[in-house]
Image (cartoon, rainbow, N blue to C red; front, top):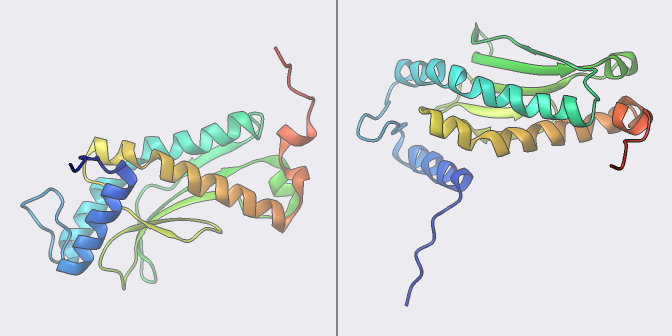
Length: 176
């Protein structure tokens, strides 16, 4: 007897990404594949507003729980550059990070000039496929965005020290 197991959303997205790479297209929504750079640029332009609230949520969770609401989240929206193609950037900065001279926590969505498909990355963290065309796709990326933002914050500590995390230097939380 074989059990039917549904893949977790992040692995479903990764499987779609691998299939798109294999087939040299971006088949989202299914049945209407994006085959040209112009097609995938349009998908990226649609993906950024879908993922925006989830990127902001991942950064605000860090701000609330680790930075004790001392941070400021900013976002660029979609930008076009000659070197990078299309990109969008969300950043979380706070006074201790700026004083230490390290970069903010970053979530970066980009469709690079030499890439077939869009990706996500952090300021210090590698790349993850950005395969978002629906609200459900975007919501499924929240755990990935959380992981990227948390890993980025972790790496920034090593560029400075634990003193940049207000939750570790401020008053102890009330145990109640």
